[in-house]
Image 1 (cartoon, rainbow, N blue to C red):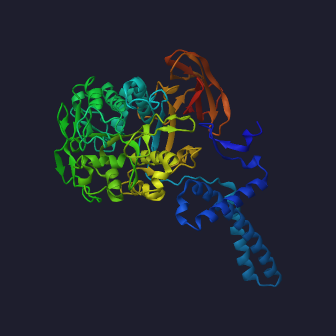
Image 2 (tube, helix red, strand yellow):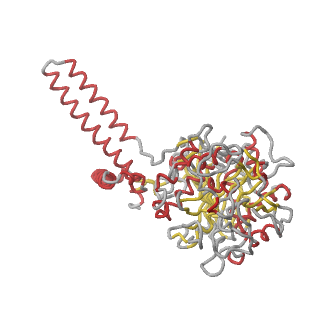
Image 3 (cartoon, rainbow, N blue to C red):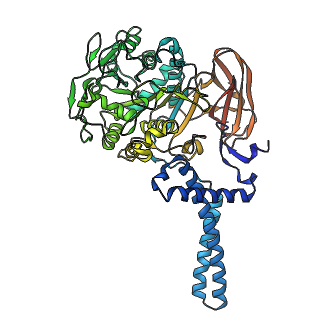
Length: 586
C-alpha cells in the first residue's frame, strides 16, 4: 500500500506514469534532478546525437524542470536581496528593477512547481473519428508460430482470431459494434472530409488493399519463411469489408510490384472468388497491376516515378497494410514506404533506381492519390522482423507478449499516428537496426514532415517511455492534441457500447437510474465486473458484476447517486481489463 502511493497512476490503465511528489521526501526529488542533469550532460555533450535516444528523452524533461526550478528560486532570492541593498542605499530605480526580477523569478518558480512536465510534444493535426487514436490490438491467440514449420501456416494462425482482432480494431477506431456499423462510420467520416458529406459506401466504389510482398519476386507456391504479407491478415480485412456489405468484385488486394504467392492467393480467392488479387505478373488468376496513370505523383525523390498503378489510382478508398520490418538505409519500411510498390517498380530491386527519400515518404502520406485515399492504416505486427528479408524474429520479451510473438495490429485513421506508434514499438525492440542506418532522428523525419505539411497528414509524437507507452491524449485526455494509444486484448475481454449514437460520441451516456445498455464480449464464460472511476482515478462505485456467458452479454448499467460528469468505466474479466470513458447525465 505504501509503495503504491509513491507513484501517479493512469486512471485508464492503472499503469505507473510518474512520481507522486507528495509521497516522496523532498531530497529524493532533488537527487533525481541532479542525477538526470549529470546523466544528460555526460552522455549528450560528447555526442549531441545521443539527445534523440529514448533514455535521454526521458531524462531531458526532468533535467530542464530541475534547472528551471533551482534557477528561478535562486534568481528570486538573489534579486530580492539585491533590491533590499539598493533600497537601503536609496537607489530606488535600480531597486525596483531588481524587485521586479525577483517577482518574475518567483512566479516562474511557482508555475514550475505547480505544472507537471509532459514528455509528449505532438506536431500536426490529429485525424480520425476519435482524433489521433491508434488501436493497439493484441491477440496472443492469433500468431501461434513457435519456430517450427512456416510461420504463416494456417494451423498456427487461427483465422477466427485474426478476424476477431481486426474487427476489434475498427470498432475501437469508429465506435461501431460490428464490421458493418464500424465501416459505415469510417466511410462516412472519410467522405465528410472528401467532398461527399453525409454519405457512406456507395455502389461502384472500389477499395484497393496494399499489402507488402517485397520478398516475392517470382510466381511461386510460397517463399518459405521470408517476411511477406500474412495470409490470415489479408483474409481478415477482406472478410470485414464483405461483412460490411462491400461487393467482392469492388475489392482489389495485392502488390503491383511483386508476385502474390499461392499461399496468399488461395487463402483469399477460395472464400472470396470475386475479389481481385493483383500482382506484377497477372497470371494464374491474378489481375495485372502494371498499367499506370502518369502524373499521379509529382515531386518525388530517390527514383520514385511519377505514376501509380491504375487499380489504386481509380480506387475510391485504399487500405494500407504494411508489415513491421526493418530496412537498410531508412532503418524501417512502414506504411509510407509500402506505397513505393504502386509506382511502377519491378521485382528486380536493383533496377529500381534507389529508394524513396524523406520527400517522397512524406508525400506518400499526404498526396491525394496515395495517403489522401487511405481510409484505414493497419500495421501488421503479427510477426515483426528486424530485417527486410529472412525469417521473422517476432518474439518480444516484456509483458504483455511475455516472450511470444507480438501478435498485434496497430490500426488508425491517422496515418502519421500509426507510423509514429509503429516506430516507437520497432525502436524499442530493434534499435540497433535503426541506429545502424538512418539513426533514430533520421528514421522518422518523414513523419514530422507529413504532420507539419499543409494540409496536415496527421499527428506525430513519441511516447513518454517504453514502460508506460503514453502519448499526449493518454496523459491528458481532455487537453491532449496528439496521439491516443488504446490497448485492446482481443484474446480476452472487450467492452463495447450497444447504444452508441450516430456521430460517434467520445463517451457513453449513462442517464442516472435510467441507465444504459452496454454490450460485453467475453472469450469464455466467467465472472466480470464493471467499475466506475473519476477521471482522477478514484473509485466511484461498482455498477455491475455478474457471471457472464461466452460471447456477447448485454448489461444494463446505472449510475444512481453519481453527480453528472465524465467518468471512466473499467471492465475486468479473466485477468484482463478494458477501460472506456463514460458520461453520467441527468
